[in-house]
Length: 261
Image 1 (tube, rainbow, N blue to C red):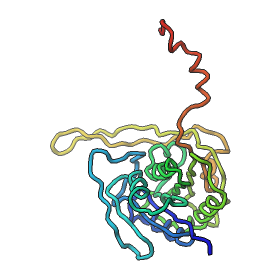
Image 2 (cartoon, one colour):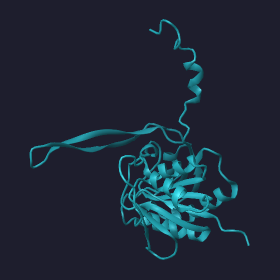
Image 3 (cartoon, rainbow, N blue to C red):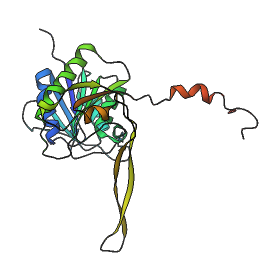
C-alpha cells in the first residue's frame, strides 16, 4: 500500500482560526497531517522572521486527529521550525491558510499566508497558499473545500516547478455560483494608502492606516478579473524577484566607468 503524503499545514491567522481548521479537515482526506501554526494572528507580517527574540513551540491538542504545534513566531518561523525541529522527513507539500481575506494581486507581498508558502518553496517543498475573500472571523469556508482538495491533489499528482508556489484565492460567493478555476497572472493593482491621524487621551499623536484598493489592470487574464467574475484564481508565484528583462538594459549603463555621472 503506497505511503500517504506528509502534509505540513500552517497559516497566519493563528492555529485556532476557522480557516486553518477547515484546511486541516480537507488535508486529512489526502494525507498525514502535521500542523505548525502561530499561537495568534500574524496577518500582514510578510516574510518576517524572529531574530531578536526567543521562539517557543508548544504541542497542543485541539481536535485529537493530528499532531499540532503552536508557535510564538511568524508564519515563516513556523515552516522553518517544522522542517528543522519537528518533522522526521520532508513534507510532500505545505499548505497555508485558508486565509481570512484576499491575498490577490499586490496583497501577496504583505501576506503572512503566502510568506509561509514561499518559505516552504525556498526549502524545496511544493507549497500552496489558500485565501477566501472574506475577512470575517466567522466566515463560511464550506464552499472552499472542493477547490482546496482539487488544487492540492493536482499539485501532488503533477508536481510543481522548482522555485514556484501557488497563490489560490476563492471568491466569497455561493458554491453554486463559482464558475470554475482559472490560472491567472497577478493583477497590476495597489493600495492608495492614507493615515488617519488622531490624538490619544494623554495628548500623544498616533496614526491608523487606511486607504482603498485600486485595480489599474483591465486584463481578463488576471486574478482580480477571475475573482470578480466568479472564478477561483490560481497564480504561480516565484520567490526569485530578479527582473530578468532589465539585466541587459542595466548592462548598457556606465557602471564601471571613470565618469559615472
